[in-house]
Length: 232
Image 1 (cartoon, helix red, strand yellow):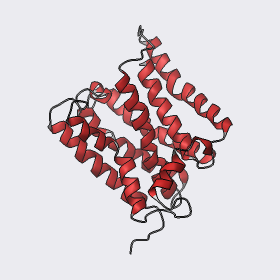
Image 2 (cartoon, rainbow, N blue to C red; image 1 turned 135 degrees about the vertical axis):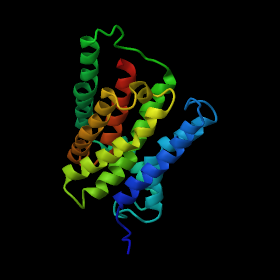
Image 3 (cartoon, one colour; image 1 turned 135 degrees about the horizontal axis):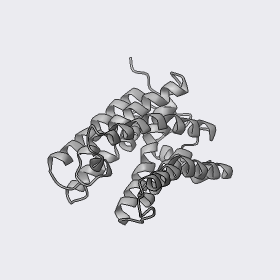
């Protein structure tokens, strides 16, 4: 019998993969750019899979009511900047500088890239920041919170990292995405997925060390994506 009033991370992980792969699969079959109307509706719906599935599960009762009684209260808590202590804003920025921006700048320097700062198309930055932040509602605020109550934190983070990497797979087949430029089966392809898998414990550390404040990982993910758009 399925137990309610507790998070069901496995429902989330499998459901999110099915949801996102379905909508992005339809986008791929359309043979249109993922930002072209009406395809953009499919691609955005797919990208919001972690958010949508987590809210559906909470609505169905698969969540700790002591944390949030409704999906709305869950959203309000996750996106409340006042839940994160002031000093943790500094820590998040330092992490972004060390783990996100520095590797990009070193890569540009080693491969003699001329432009290391480019504001690029505004739409790409907005998608990276907004969608990236919204992902954390599912991956960490819901799935990690639930899974780390069942297994050790490091194992929970690696399991989520594996599903998180798989979740990105359709992006390699979507015309116009950063991932499609990396190619399938290339060194860059495997490096991208490995970085997600190995980066997941960092998100878990940040989430737990900040006092299980989801806004910390929301901010870290959003700023990390923004730095990628600005400095690549």
